[in-house]
Image (cartoon, rainbow, N blue to C red; front, side, top):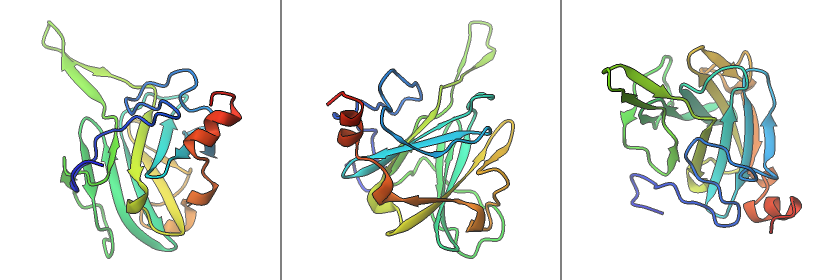
Length: 191
């Protein structure tokens, strides 16, 4: 792992996941579907150090997301992706959104939304297939975690109807139920 303040996307050799937002054949084979909703699909796989999440929106382009992570009824932190990354590292006691720290993502990464200016000086947006997250297992709460996404432009919640201020409607994530990369590849006949 890189320095304590950031983590560089590491490509797991067993599965070939590259945290770049473009989904290639076989890259996520064997991943567990955590949420198959129409507003977004969430899949997960892990290795000994990281949890990998793939978030796709079949009906809408990927244009940013806030991933809230908690345990039981406690909101812990929020990871933001748009054209830059930020982290709100302590949600305890907050009653409304507070801005996070830009560019200081600790122990996680995700592909950002890339922008560029064309020859006519018009901004162009490169829309990825997915948001691919890599989160250090040590960053997650022990035992069961809870996850909730606020998807951007158009805004939607995943799971549908979830509230970023209350964890009772969030997805439950038991890390023990998420397949290991090597095992997931073997189940698909790749390893």
